[in-house]
Image 1 (cartoon, rainbow, N blue to C red):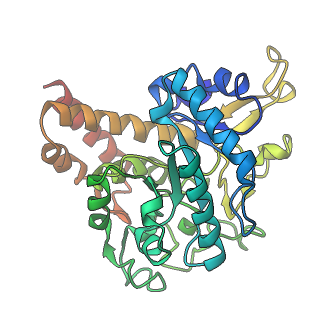
Image 2 (image 1 turned 180 degrees about the horizontal axis):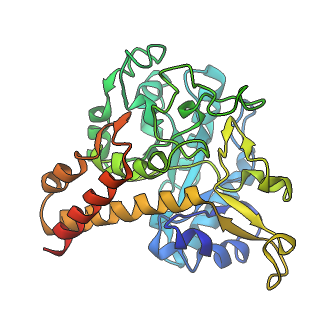
Length: 343
């Protein structure tokens, strides 16, 4: 948790164990300055119906605990992951969202889904936090012609009525940015989609093989599209093999996917620690730079206007898949933002 705060991220996830101990100890010191903790109750989404009795007790207890500590407005349930257009997953998502809101109506549900798929599955009204993939928010069909027909050009405005209704819009990036090569790195190294215009350094990415600007730009694009939250599925995916993590970061479809920290074993980083601590990757520092850039944007907006800030942001970002690859353009724009924020 402390490592996350230093890099402007929230790592926290609360499961059924340790409600009054582990969760409070991990989240308590940081929750007042972040978006808070996600809930991961028993029986995660699948084609198997949830154990509602167990889940209900967990949701109610967790919400009561958060409410008593002033965290309830930052609490959300990661209700379902990527149901897409698949009927069995949509049915499981709807069952869990219905059970959640029946148990604790105030507890927000978060689902990684685009509005178009949510509408098709008749579950739009069950979602409090929409989290579509960035690729489907603004796609050039000439670059990615195989995407759904509704994911053409800028679809960001379809979420405006939902936000007006009190819902939130976040988004996320995934291995769709580099090709989802789940088994092994592509021959010759690099990114899985190096011969595919849709995948070859087209989207923001947190992969090791991509330049630093690809790590940093996500926050800039978030401001440009007025998206106020980002979900990323993991930061320590390779910790299951603590020693191999330092030499092999290939996981979940990419080189470094879900792995933004390294396990700081005493045998590797030296004396002074009796257990492993997270060591932030260089990519994590680039992501932090982007989040700090975003803070400048909000500070400048408070002093002037969103349109004034967008003039600066547009010198770096054109769209979700078009931006400057020159790091000095980011530096110059940040200086301009600092001037706006201070003037």
